[in-house]
Length: 65
Image (cartoon, rainbow, N blue to C red; front, top):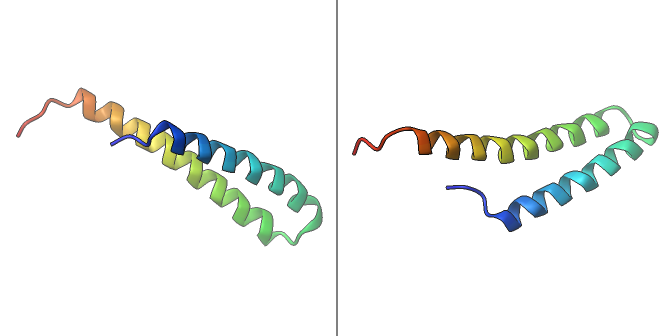
């Protein structure tokens, strides 16, 4: 099941805000803070991309059962 469009939009907005926080944190915080923010950004992107990928794959595989 694909992620609904409103959820994707909110995730993209969260990613945008996290990127802004990352830019600031990279200049002012200890190194572990930007590292964790970066991991969260990657997880958001992975969630969106993998969900779409799995949806595309499921459409290509014939139903066996």
